[in-house]
View 1 (spheres, rainbow, N blue to C red):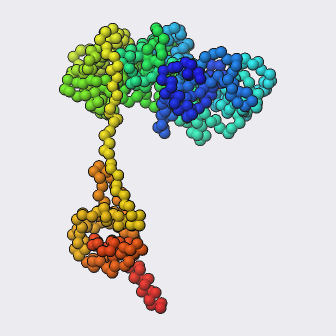
View 2 (view 1 turned 135 degrees about the vertical axis):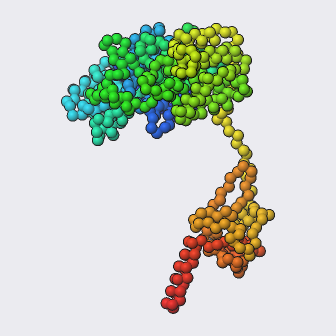
View 3 (view 1 turned 90 degrees about the vertical axis):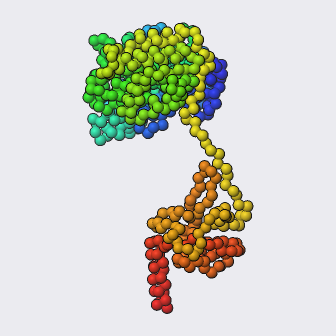
Length: 601
């Protein structure tokens, strides 16, 4: 009902699978309260086994209240809930929680200057909260507060469920947000503890469950309506990157396609795009009292040393968009703001090649160029491809779009001149925010931008041949073997009296033979070469024996020689083959048993 009244962008498509959504309780580390949300549209999920297992939902705050065990609309609520982005992930303990970076940004940058940056509405590290609670299991439990708490206090968060909190009269947040009763489970459930069970020093191997709600909602760069919209969103995200680094000393370190969004329903004067997802960021000291990433981390009274942090961190950045200098990994190279700015160039190139009508001077299309440039899976190949792209003076042209063509050309020149190269005739000039923003502003000031120039990417589309159905035999009484022989009518056969070795190659026992159950298949189709049960169990005929005595089968057909070789009223010639080791051994055992039974009689 709230979504239909607000009518946010594409809301009807997003609620199409509402029954697959869920109700999620978010821990707000700033207040200790529990904020429920209805997650109604799954935006993204990381399905890899060894990862943060990130899930991103479109969600809206659930303003209903509990009455008699049911959720009902709150008659006293006048607040209008807005669509939000709900993100949950399992972070490495050697990395700071993403909530810390949002707190740094919002505490050092005034709200009116938070331009091009996502803002956190609420969120917290559930695993860290639960671990503090679990560690108090053997200590004195504070007294349970009385049940008559003021009605206007926020509902506290409890990781083990609302019913457990109510049963212990946990009706308001405590000073450190830890519930005032004993943790009811043997181990924490929202932070892994398996490595520390054997060795307390292996805290860097653990992960902790984090939920965050982002106030800014957007859609991917690849879903732009016009290329100018995409470029404007990237420009504002670069401005946000500059503000975060210069004002709060927060460096993003993972500029990628998915971390730059086009703002949904942005009001006049607001940012058109923004940068989000600060999981892999770093913080520098902003004054004498603050600490940056060089300091050790304290995880619930357990210290993680700086050496341990650097040793066990996963590599930062999305592979396609990592700067050249970071791929080369020269000694002494540290991730800096210029490397993030170069990542913006590779993101822009990716989107242009895949979603605009572009070509190079040699006639290569955007799809072909994208496969060539971003097809590397190893560092040395990626270095070669990106270096070659920067050194290639052939112009990339976007059809009917001179502003975008000029932007790519000027941005490429900045990136090229920023590379360390002994053969470059001009001095290396580091990328700066001012220089990059200048080329974006110059392009956006041009007036001949096309409208509705988005193009669908065709790289993942594959031509699929239509496979005609196999013929169906109407006579249900015919056996499988007879049906196959009917289908193979007209194919050349080997005379039964010929030597088997000259036509059928001898293979080891247990492997499929070349001519077994051969069946014509339609062009482009595949067919099963499964051996029929009858032919697999039949002993091989003696070489040169031809067909044996015909025996009437149950359906009126006859079997010739071995069992299961049915042929109708007339026995078809069979392929003689050389006995395998296994079949010869079985025949010898049968003869031995037969001779034993004869002597017994």
